[in-house]
Figure 1 (cartoon, one colour):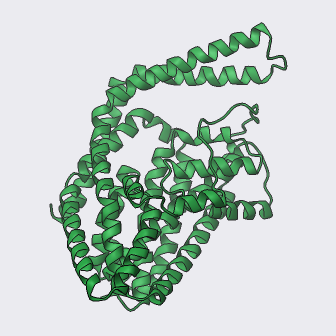
Figure 2: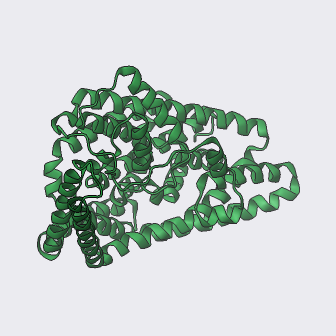
Figure 3: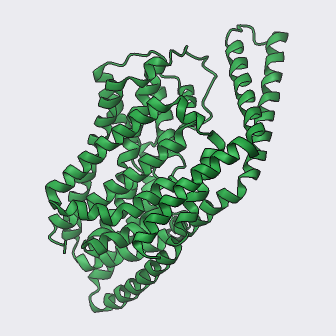
Length: 456
């Protein structure tokens, strides 16, 4: 499939996915959605009534508790039925993402080992690594700051006027925060094969760096290993080309399932918030491209042409991981040296999620505004720094941005139940931040290549 055709087919898939999702939402699973929404409303009403009870041993409280259990059962049963109805569409995107995940771990290992071995000495690796982490740190701070500034400018949560919930009411999202011990365990692999099996990119990077340096240090004997791994990497990239042919189908399936579940009505309800968030993302894009222009000059627009398909696929599938192999290939076609891209890109997927960073401050402060909780400028800066530190190394966690936000909210006495305001529209927001992550990592890889004098 030619590059231009792939872009066209992805656009068509996006449009057809919206149409098919609307049809399914309106005619096929409408009754199911009504029952789910009714159960959700009843659960919220019961939670509100329960919050007023001081005596939890009373008959009335026990009755409310039984009613809640019954409503949760109705919701879960209908959720299961809805998933069965959408199984075919979910299967399209699931197969594509599984195929990509099958490729990512061996591709990161082979390309990074070859890249590090070609760089040669530890000093050079340290220099490139230092520049990379400096860029990532600056990009993270800028992303978080833009999120903070825009949410304070728009104040999207002030129109909500939500009363503070009872302490036992939660969003259902498991909180997480990494201690130093947890972070070390997450970074240093216990087993290389376990890291490969679980697609733990950061752990694979650590092992690959050591393996690459060791390979370079044994001289001519290492050349055999480098040639073999280089050949394997090219085979995997060839497989990537075949897998990418399925991208339009994956995008169609993912968009259809999202619209069928949530309906276009939710876009109307949250139109202002979604619009403000995407406007903030556009501003972040402009800043990222401005940083790229500072280093790459007019070639940054050529880079954008190379990665547009990758960004579209990430947007459609709501995951930047789905385009890692294609992004690697396109950056090399753009002119980046393989050894630089193979080093920078895996680190970017663990440390440089620009879209996710901006969303975290935007979402956290939106929820604070919704509950009319005022945070001073100093408190917001502390929240920003907390998010910057707590988000590192959690890229592999499902719904990582929401999980980190849930952990951060409790630190500032903001009810994490407020995440319920965003759960319904999170798939639509995730599409934008996934595409932004791809742009940020692509520009970072190209900029480091330029700084190292390795850009053709």
